[in-house]
Amino acid sequence: MGKIFRLVIVLFIIQHADAKKVYMNSLSDCFLKTPIEVEEPVMISHQDNNPYDMLVCNITLKTVPGEKLCLSFQHWVVTNCAVYLHLQSGTETRSYDCFVRGKPETFCSGNELLTVILEKKLLSQIGYEFSLLVESSKGDTYIHFKNGHNDAEMGREIGDTLSIVSLTISSATMLFVLVVLLLLCCRRQTVYKRTSRQQQTFLKFEDIPKFENCYSGR
Image (cartoon, rainbow, N blue to C red; front, side):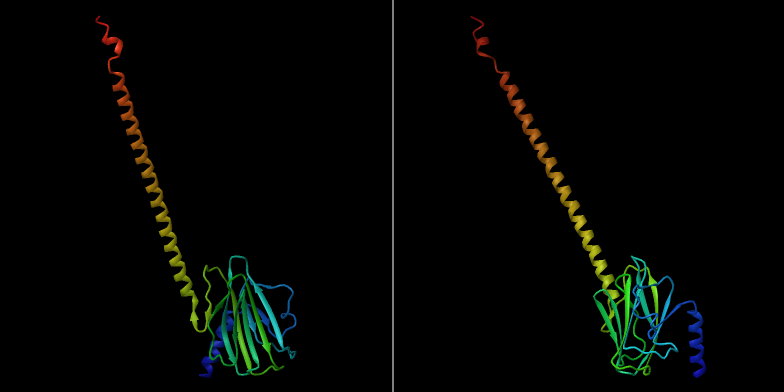
């Protein structure tokens, strides 16, 4: 069993060997003035061999406008209940602690920015291990797992519903325009018929013999 586990770790390292490494106990990675550009996959680890420790580490990542960032948990073991991990995107925040068992679900941002915060109530480098893989995604919808529910399906259902509503409104608008055009056409034909009748009546009135013609025989 131990050999299989080591083999999985080795395959994972080989697969993501080209990923940029970021450590949440490194002064050069935490509290950067500008976000880290995600042009290639970024691997965030809880710590490296640096003995330095801090209570809070804040790392912001950024992709190009129109794309989103997806964070997947490659490894997650936290037994130190003074350690918290927060993911922030826009107004959304997702937090993880020692009560989260197993690997959490993938989290994708709502825009091009994603902030990862490691918070500790006490200085400690033990009782927590995690590896987070951040990649850019061109998907139109983002996956946001909240309270164990997948909102991506809900997002797609809302999108389908809006499409149907939009199509219905467009059809109703076209039908209304056609009815208005039909009514205008019918009204025009009615006015034309009335005008024709009036002209015919006027002509018949003119055809009535004039009075001077009646006395022309005298």
